[in-house]
Length: 428
Image 1 (cartoon, one colour):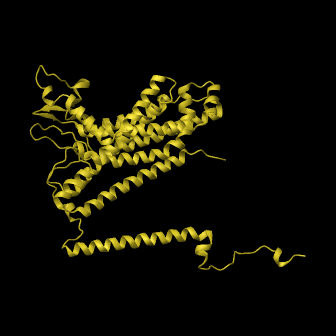
Image 2 (cartoon, one colour; image 1 turned 135 degrees about the vertical axis):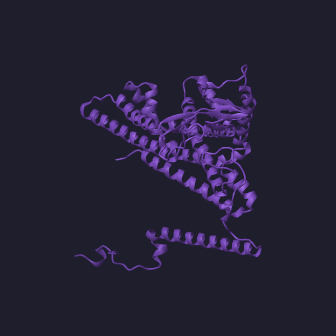
Image 3 (cartoon, helix red, strand yellow; image 1 turned 90 degrees about the horizontal axis):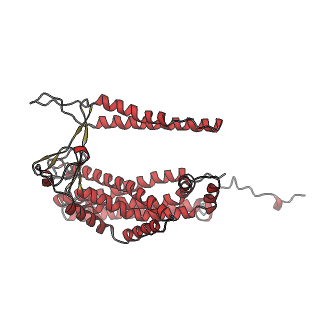
């Protein structure tokens, strides 16, 4: 006989009660999150209202109209067109691009330095291992600002001045077949330009020759072709892997991949009429080409070698986290040490390396704000420096700086977390 107590309790039709928001585990976390969100919004509203009232009492207001006013100052490193008559908003964009450029270069270089140093620290060669340990301990225990100043001082004191390139008995010469000039002011390299630009080319009035230019649409076309070539090369690689799984023999795809990468880009550059503008010594400095200032180089390498020391420890920890049996099993199959590291150890170590690597990339982006120490005009030097001093809009400029760094940090975290999820081991 079945009693009422033996029957299972049916709660599917139970009515909702307010007490469930705290007592039911299904709703408790959502309740606390909602309360925290309301508290944050209320606090921000209180602070914002208080700020507006205080500014009104002082006869001030929050306005971003100053971004359209002429800036009145020059910027030494300009990835886009800019002069002293451009607006403060354009100056902020130039500084923003300068920050992104040095952050990207430093992230890539620091990763290379860190991976190399982390792997070599575990080398069986005693000398190599100790040299890498010395590098890690020295560079990560000295403030990055010191390294920025040291590298910048070395560059301006050891590299030749532009005047050393002048005359028949010049003490310095342009390297790489007369295309690259390394001076104490920076490095001058050839600039690619197009005579058949999508945006059209101007004609010189005195000579009637077509003036080569380099437009946004031209580079967008090059990027699109590169992406298409990359996708095509991936498809060829997937076909080769499929064939290997079916037949046991992997077809040779090297020449196909090279053709896919080289031919489309070469044809596009030929259609656009690729030419090179070489740097030339005119007056007291080099003109033409692309200028890479010494301040950018110093900041770039200082951030790279400093952060690379931290990444090296992350890489070493990731490698040590891989079971030793994996290495021994790969060696028993006849794999060489370099193949074991690239095919067996590092792919498994990535799940340990990537999470702290995200923090190091964020540190590079934020540490790039030290650029003003060597005169490199990043977003902190333009928007948070000269623009702030000229306009007196401290609150507005600081809010824009916070928004920029917050946005960049969130984007880095998002894409690196997506990459981290793809690198995770797929468990059955």
